Structure formats: C-alpha cells, structure tokens
Length: 283
Length: 311
Image 1 (tube, one colour):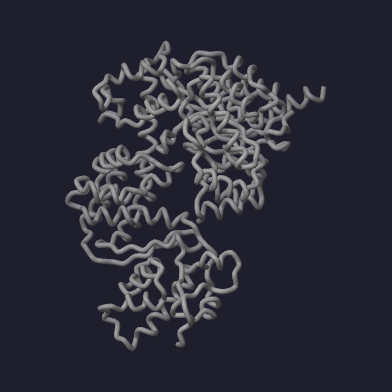
Image 2 (cartoon, rainbow over the protein chains, first blue to last red; image 1 turned 60 degrees about the horizontal axis):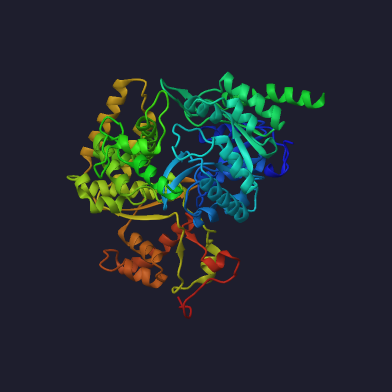
C-alpha cells in the first residue's frame, strides 16, 4: 500500500525539509538522510546560489517537491508562468511526486502568501479538483494535496473538512499528503475528533505524511513548525500509518530551526511507529 | 455566494491594514462594521468570535509581508528608521500587494512607488531611492538568471565591432547619487554582528546605523551589482564603463557603445583603445557576457549585424 501510484510507486523512508541553515552541514558532512523535501518556490528562480545548492543536493540525495503557492482552491485558473517554472524544476529534480496544499491564497492575481481554508462546498470541491487535474496533466507527475491547519470555518460549508478532502481527491483522482499535525491543530481549533478525520481518509491515496510541531495560545493553536512533535500528534501518526502502511514521512521545522542533528533525530522518532507497523504487516 | 466572491471578500479583509497596535480594524473602508462583515462569512466557536478568527489571518498576513520587506530592505530601514520604514511598507503593500507566487518579488515595485509617493522619503529622497534600487538589484543579482558564458575565445573569433554582446541577466547597472554600497555593507555587518540578547548592544547597533546614515555625503557613483561563485558583489565602475555597459544592455553594437561612452569624456583619445580593451577583458573575466539566445542553443556562430569591421 505505501508505494502507490500517487507517490510514483516509491518507497521513501523518513525525510526532513531542506532548509538554508543546514546547507553547510549537509554538503560538508553528507549525513545519511532518506530524502529531502524542498519548497518548490525557493528554487523556481533564474539561478544563483539556491539552484547551485540544489544541484549539489540532487547529486547525493532523493528530493521531493512541496509547493506553497499553487493554491488549488483559488477560484482563478493556474498561473501559466508559475506552471512553466514549476515544470522546469520538476525536470531538474525528477521528483517522483509533487505536493501542494488544499487551500486558496490568491484572487485575480493578487497573492496573500497564506494557506487560507476552503469553504467546504460542492462547487469549491469541483473547481479545486479540476485545477488539480489540470496542473497534474501539465506537469506530468503525480500530485498529492495536503490538508492545511486552519483557524476559521465558513458558514457556507456543506460538509466537514475530511468529507471535502475525500470529495476533491476522488474527483481529481489524486493523492493525499496527510499532515497529522495540521489535523491535530484544526481539531483543537474547531472542536472535532482528529481520529474521525484520520479514519475517514482513503488510506490507499496517502502518498506522504507530514509531522510537525506547533504553538499553543490561550484560545487557539497556531501551526508554527517551530517545536518538536507532541505526543498526541505521534498518536495520530501511529494511527495514520496503521491504516496507510509504511508511508514516506517528513518532519517540517521552519522557524527557530535547531541544528541539523536535532531536526533529523526528531524526524527519526517516526521509526518507533513505522517499526511497529512493519511488525504487524509481517505477522 | 460563489467561490470567487467569497474569496474576494475574505482576501480584502485579510489584506486590510492593521491598527497601530496590530489589531484588525473595526471598520471597513466602505464604513461597514468589520464585526458584521466577519460574521457574514466566518463561524464563531466557543472561544473566538468571527472577528477574532478572521483577525488571526489578518495579523498573519501583515506579519509575513512586513517581515519580508524588512528582510529585503535593511538599508532602507536604516535610512528611514524602524517606525517610518514600517509605515512606508504598510502603505506600499496596501497599494502594491503581491502579484507574484513568490515573496521574493514583493519589493519589485518599491522604487517606482516611492517615486510616485515621495512623502514617505521626504528629506532623504535621493538617498532612499538609491538604497531601494541597490537592495532590489542585490536580490536580482543573487538569484537572477545566468545564461551560458561567452568565453574569451569566442569573443576573439568574433572580432566584430558591430557585434552585439549580451550582458548576463543577473548583472545590474546603477547610477547613484550616494555611495550607498558601503552603507549597505555596514548595515548588514551590524545586523549580522549584533548580539540581540543584550538590549544595550542592540541599541548601540541602532545608533551606529543612524550615525552611518547621517555621515553619508552625496557623491555620484556608478555601480555594478553582480555575482561571482554565487556571492553578490558591488563593483564601482567609471562613468565611461557604465555608459558602455548600459549601451550594451540596451542592445547597441560595441561600436555604438564605445562611441556613447566617450562623449564628453576626459579620457585622452590615445588611451581609449587600451581603456576599452581592458574593460572588455575584465568584464569577460567576470563572466558578464553571455551567449546570445541562438548561440546558447548550440549554434557555432555569433550573431552579427552587417559585415565585420577591420581593426
């Protein structure tokens, strides 16, 4: 199950996000890492140091692209220049699959640079699925959509978030990047049971899993990616891989970034749960 | 309400400027209550009102874009001071929100906007404009496109005064009223070296920047912002060099560029041949020339206009 058509039948292990403070460590020490996830937009540029670093990383490591501004859920058509640059990067990295968020963030060419939550309506699901299909066909690589963390819900919503996710991925026939931290954050912000969400996701579409830390405020939780993963999120992760199998897993750490070793060690904690899953499969 | 209408309404609210104490405004530009507006779209929960939930996104938006501006324009920040820079950034981003999928391009329209809105740089107009240009050029030079380099051998083979040379897209040419290149480096050094665990040291860094800005005197300079081995460098050039480079960038032939460079020049005529040769050798060494489009695709000949000139 983990190697499926949505991750191009790969069987990646535990990866971490490629971040600038770790470049030197990675290139000089060459640590053993299953794979790196890159933020596509950071490398959709003309040249210079970022592209040079990426080329060096590509010589030694497996890389998967993760985007933050395709905005599958925005009402407008995909930006052609964005797609052209993204395709060039796909060719460069040979990413086996590509992910971006199930959200919106731009209107009529103006960008908020945020991952804004979708209204969970049938109209939105249909339009989002169309856009995912269009992007996937243009890029010629499997696409997985990631559930975002959110702090607001709309009156117009006609279904739950997980029903919306299922509606979109079935319609678009695409994969899921299941972010278990985002499910946890949203469950606390919107008062739902995160296990209900995890149990409702079509496991055979899960191409990849994200884990991360967050920040707790008095009245809400913010998805800040600046802390270790907390136990309740590991529990959700355990359940997710129990359903989806030994899936490519990535730790996101984007702010107050500690040493490479600390980030990697945190990611490798996932092995505790992956090992259990493998044992169960063996039994 | 359809998807586009909802997204337009929410995006407008999210991108509306915050109040001075970084809260969402209570009134929309049209006069409508923001609480009522938020309640129309956003569900409240047991802890937060619709307004408060929307406010989270409103604050996140401004935190992100203002942070990006501050990071990209530390020199302009030093010139204007923290408060004025932030006010200016808010006004700029309100009028010129991002039109690109990447935050990298957030400041791309800043210079033009400042020219149209000089009140934000009153008293420091030329200095601030120079700094905005240098800092944007720095971004372009850092990760701008690099085409295949035209090597010296190919240049020798061409030996054509009518040859049109192309400059690397990442090479940025600036004519400035102030020597802001030094100021940029000083501001960055101060930022990098500051120990912000100590308020006293941070305060000292701030004072140093203020002094550096105050000490800067006008002096026309010609600057090329370029990169070597993936690091950005500022290289001051002479007026004649600058003129040649801008002419080449504009698509002029070498002959025309040379002619334009020495109009009103104090360089004696007998020295000009050597001067030009030295310039071109230096620029070629720095990799500033790139192959024309057809050459980059593998053609063995350089694009020339008309017949070759004999030397």
